[in-house]
Image (cartoon, rainbow, N blue to C red):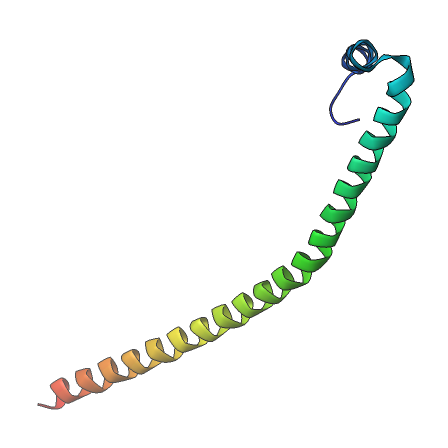
Length: 93
């Protein structure tokens, strides 16, 4: 749980008991629980909002990459054709 061992959890509980006392400890526990739940809910909400945007951006990047590769291939073929045409012109001359 949160990367804490049993010893660390016990130390935290003892310190909390000493700080807040037996009357306030249940209320503090409830408040901490609500805060953790709220943080978890916000994290899930952000994840649900950001994840589709990231997926869309990745799809767009793939599309751009494919377009770039296609353009580079066309340019390479055009350069090779021009080079071949130039070589043939030099051989004829």
